[in-house]
Image 1 (tube, rainbow, N blue to C red):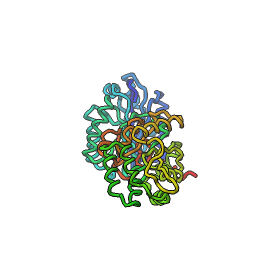
Image 2: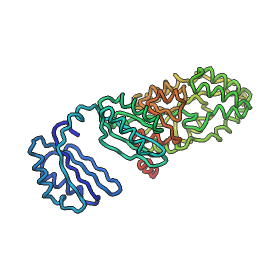
Image 3: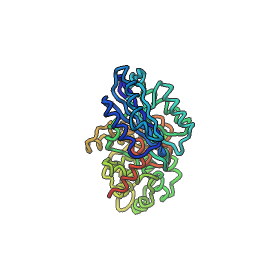
Image 4: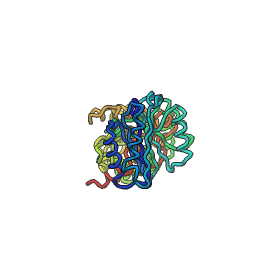
Length: 397
């Protein structure tokens, strides 16, 4: 809404064709410039608002008279009102923020917690958009608030108590301009840890899993832990790599996420501390060209227990994100990174939006936002992409 004195005309009642046309007709007769419009229809019930520039105090009385005499006022089941809008508090608030709320089931208690957190900072919710009903429920709130940093902090604390996921981003079209989405592989794009699957083939699963868990929790240096685990794979035939690649499952929603991103013009990439021999075939099947990962050394068809070249570790992941962003011509602040482990922290911090996906506590606490639902395509809601848009993209050839 504009900060100068204005009048908001509200039409409510049972929706049917022609109601909007009647409003625009009477506003045309009134003759004041229209500065903003919003409409929502819920289960056949219409709420249509139009803000018009009307600085004079006498304007409201004249407008009310013209509305009362209009064809719109005579429509059965339709109510039309007008009030002066001159809210100095709202005008003093900062840039709008988009608050995205995701939960397996949205309860009144959860919404109360979110709205109370916003109100406690003097913020106002100006618009609510329903993004999805399945496989999770998601709403997007347009919020005017003076202190966005405090809003994010307060909502994150509330989300942990309420068992929901919340993201706070600056409103604007730039969210739709985040054209590069970089995903970790193990336990993010893919189910489980690939090195654990390889270890199972050589009978050292327990030892490798223990090292993996400590590395992902940030208790061990990633490069040292990777070399230690890879050394345990020495002697495996390289045919095992093809077996594990074929057996590895995508995370639920991963295929939908990648397919939707690509059809809407985004670029998907994989940056992983895993292995090219496993990830490259999966990436090719998904149509992903940008991949950074480690490569296991193979000599005469046998794994040597060594890794070839520089290790893609915590710092390497962030560098790969920057390199890919430059390659596709996207500013780093217009990228999204998704990961679950401590070696993803630099990448999550470097991206414009870092999302911790079913992550370890140290990662959840450091990331911009977190997803605790098991569906990777829920990331799309943080981009403002609704379930209807996802389904529409699926219908495209």
